[in-house]
Length: 92
Image 1 (cartoon, rainbow, N blue to C red):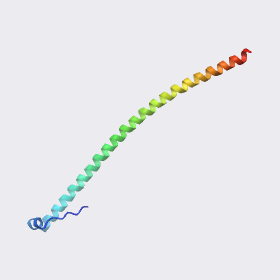
Image 2: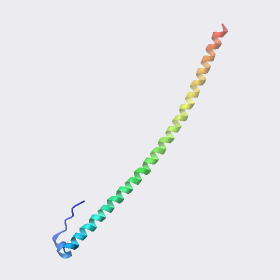
Image 3: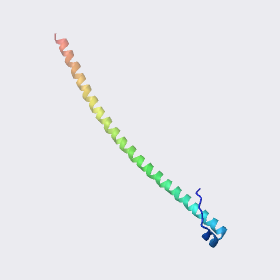
């Protein structure tokens, strides 16, 4: 909690109890503002985090599809190579 110093002139005009009430009102307003700011920042962070996670999932899906494609090409090459070796071996 912050310390608010009310000038003596204002304290004399308002009176001691009114000055204390003014300090309480200001402190409560500050707390509400701080709480609201934290809520807004949390909402923005959660939204941004969700967007980034979505982008990451799309990238991972694309990488997976690309990996499956290259694996298929590799397997076809391996089968072709083994088949050629077997034909060469059994022809003689």
